Length: 591
Image (cartoon, rainbow, N blue to C red):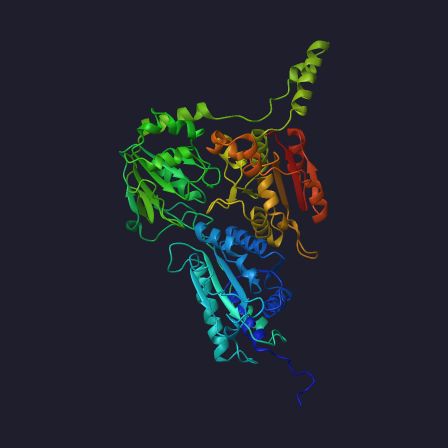
């Protein structure tokens, strides 16, 4: 008879402990769990690790939300979060986040519980062919062996094998042996019993590693290379590995999504005009080009470009696409995640670039900077008429007061909305752009500012925008770090991810402002070809996706603070007031 204090063990739990402890000991700090029966061993081990203070645990009932929450954490930290889910359709709901992680180069670890092999393909409940489901996107995949033994002292062969799996999986997610970081899929089959008591060695083993040091590159090195989702500049030990860019041909630098500081630094060192998308993380410095769309279309400037150097993934303007398709322009693309940029069929893909000489084409840069200054837009409200307000002449003072009242009552439009968000955001904050019409308005109008910007432009879908922003907020605000995460999106992108509004009681509430520009449907189609060929009825029926959703009721249902802002003054007040939790800010916009 077993002693009263004997551990009620299960092979599933000991295997889950070995795998998760191996990941945590190597620096993984976030686990996102979508509860289920087959995955209970992994989930309960995660709870024990949270209780020991070794991980931050986030519980989500929707696997798609869970996947994008982990994606946001990986975007912000550069380290993968673990996603745990049960078998069947739960696994399929992780596909959108996995694809975005692949194309954007974001580290992500997917641990999907499964039935044992003998139950696959025989009609067993909640069972499908999970191995290979992410094959086109993952950096590594493995269908693990069914755990058969328990391990009371962490010395079994099974525990050693799972620790090795943890090591190789983390390395693959971080991009070892690949061009960029990305998703990893571990399919973990379990037989009953599906859970038991955690082994005594688990916490000590998980705590035995050291925290990751992260990337300490500062962007001041001699060459600049493509990276993953956070797109920072890397200093390489051997400068000769970089492709040398000599002065001579009239050159511009294009920074697409996630290009980061590397693009700005390279443009600065080479004396090149910088065309930086608002989602690039490169829109700062003295050489950014304002109103770049019109200037690229100008034969006197864009028409004379002879060479373009591309960082990141450009997705926001047709003018940049046309530039990169030209056969009379030498195109050089710094490799990043996903497919190499090669729109003209002859683009040279390189791992890194460096400036070959200190000489710059001052005349070429000067032309662009003068044109840029002429295209810069000041969206700030007009300053008060101080003299009029202080005047003793009644009609002068009344006129100044009426002018101020008109400014305060002026309705918000898209330009004022994006300007308000941009002005309210500072380096300790985070700004997340959804794939909506509003991001293109921001790209066209906003000036330079060095702030942390995120967006899911790997595939430019509206999937998971709020969940991604939540992950960014949770990761950036650990250990009571300051800052607010703001996400700007349209009403359809908001409704597509409204499940991400739900957070379980007891979890840390992020400082998160979700700002919805609500025009009642997909007005982005107004600027596309379909608007010229479809009738009004067809546009409304199958393109605009009109809705009558009451956002304030959704905010109440999910426990969010709600604000409806119709003027710039009220929006500025809400955005800049101290916030300690989740706010849903609705801005009605004209179609």
